[in-house]
Length: 475
Ligand code: GLU
Image 1 (cartoon, rainbow, N blue to C red):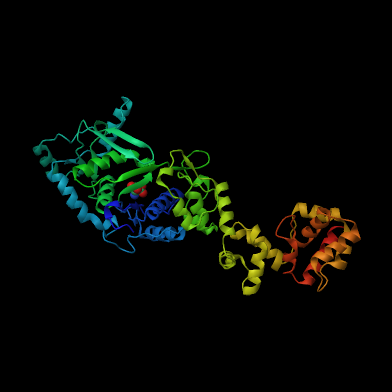
Image 2 (image 1 turned 30 degrees about the horizontal axis):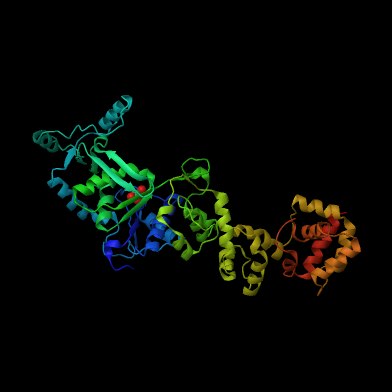
């Protein structure tokens, strides 16, 4: 870790625990993690749970589990503490109150008594007049007496930040380059809600500054929030981080990723058997380009990460791509890991040796644990179903073919390869004409793992029974 803390890159992931971690947020978390690790910096996990009604303890715990599963470790966070604790915004109220009072003291806030209905009407009026909606400033210029009178009546009030007028707010976004905003286009915004909770703009920016965050890497839906947050930090004389706004994740149809694109929570994908490395490889290439096309393990992924390769183009989540990385991830599992991964699909009580033999034979044909089901049945169960193509191959080979096969294949002690050769000689068949009906008869499929090693796992009597069954089907 660099000794000069000025130079330390500090990133953070700041989710609101209002649901399960979805792919878009998982990508943001991963990019922040990689950026920090690449730079030898620090990665903070902060839980933004100021919205108490929608936040839950269960979602927070699920977040920890999902992030760990993805392979992310944080240096500071609610579960492990750190120099800037607490890392839960609900527990930081006193801090926000203190910083709010500084704004108050500087005359930069005022209570707003506008009701949601009033704000709505004002919004509609502005839209109808072709103006961008922003707070019209109704309560900005109330006199002290008017304010006191409203407060005395017990009217609920939010607290707004007095946005300075006639200023240009500019910053250099690491992805989009220089950004300029006119402060006159930004209406005075709420920093404390009517219920007393701190609004996102405020708590998020203050925490970044107090926690020493130097880079805010987040979705570009936050781009227009940034000038507001910069104005707040300037008013409080707090340090302003660098910003990088990455394109939101879209589905292949170009629409924002949602349920209708299939499973979009990490939890669901994990439960279906997707591997963390597959997700890491796909997500690290969404909105960020890698030089290497091939599989990147944890270390290589960190080495590949480069803030200058964050892209502006829409990032599309693609199941075909995920499946590609899943195949790679599966190929990179050790036998032991593979057995553990598909364990729920294996017959109960199968001994360790048999587990390893089975996995060695079928692993090339398995993308998700559920794919193992068919081969478990072929190897350890009874064959009661045939693919239509398999049935056709059996019928085409004819009864005589299987009568011959019964003579040579599945005889106790007989080796498969020489036996098939003998069958070829006896029947005059070769190539697919020889192998396909055998595969069909013995597995019920016309495709699958290499036949000889798979049959080595089957008792001779079972092989004979299957050939006999096929002979009858071929009559
Ligand atoms: N809690 C905010 C969100 O989940 C954090 C945004 C940010 O990264 O600044 O959208």
